[in-house]
Image (cartoon, rainbow, N blue to C red; front, side):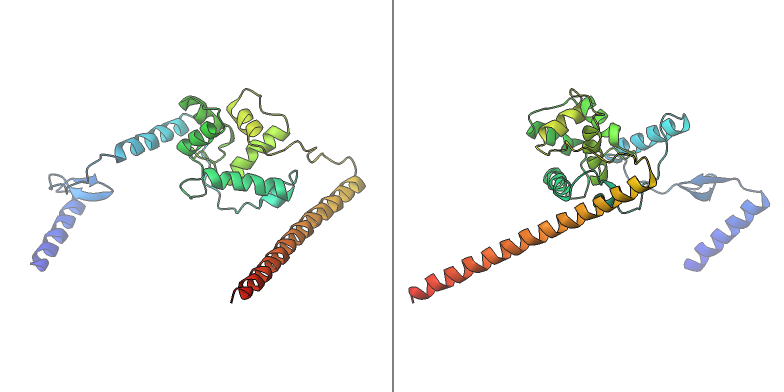
Amino acid sequence: MASDELSSKLNRRLQIEDGTEEAVAVDGFIQPHGAAEEERPPAGSADSELGAKLQRRGELNEGVGEHVQPSMKVCNPYTEFKEFSRKQIKDMEKMFKQFDAGKDNFIDLMELKLMMEKLEAPQTHLGLKNMIKEVDEDLDNKLSFREFLLIFRKAAAGELPEDSGLGVLARLSEIDVSTEGVKGAKTFFEAKVHAINEGNRFEAEIRQEQECKKKEAEEKKHKQAAFRELQSAFK
């Protein structure tokens, strides 16, 4: 049975190559004209996604948006966002994870909607889309942690109007980003001193974190010892 089917396919291919039969493409495969089409899965929920992709492709062809491949580069926020302290970045990360309900390391439109409602500053659907668009570098219509940090960088630099969605988000987030920021050095020696100061600040923050963790561990150890002592008194 299989040999008959194989023979039929080979014969059909020879006819196509000889030009005696027209070939048509079906889902990326060459198939003789008039051959029965295989059943295709129902479109259903895929229609909206397909429509969005086609619309996006049309925009790119018309030059409306720039095509950017998703970056595979791992972002190190402590080295890329040097204008912020480690504590500030950790506070931003905590907030980001709090509203990343899907735990996929992105904040999508619905999650951003819930975030703004939680901050008691609800936005319209168009307003939410514009918020994402302003910092969405890879055009995937959602916010990565790096893009989330860009919001606070723009806020610290005074680049966000107070009445804009992102401006409201930064202002109501309870994360203080009123830092001086990194300024361009005028001379080589000034740049060198600035680099040394940045390194010292970074090391000082790490030491402070380690001391806090050590203190917490010691307090936990004392509490456990006190609990064991109290427990032994009742035996």
